[in-house]
Length: 58
Picture 1 (cartoon, rainbow, N blue to C red):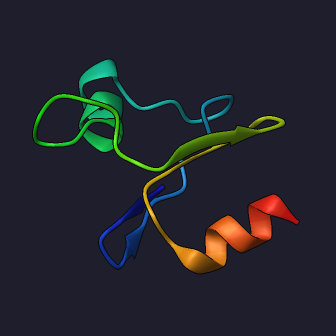
Picture 2: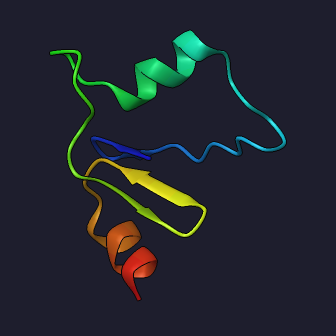
């Protein structure tokens, strides 16, 4: 997950944060899902980071 210049990696299988923390990472100020948001296999990328998106899409 990219949030500004900050990148947050969340492992939902082994170290799942609480629902409130997870929603705080996924939702923007308006309460909608941050854009862009895409899923590739078991990876879910939320927010814009050119390096992460390129790595995920290749």
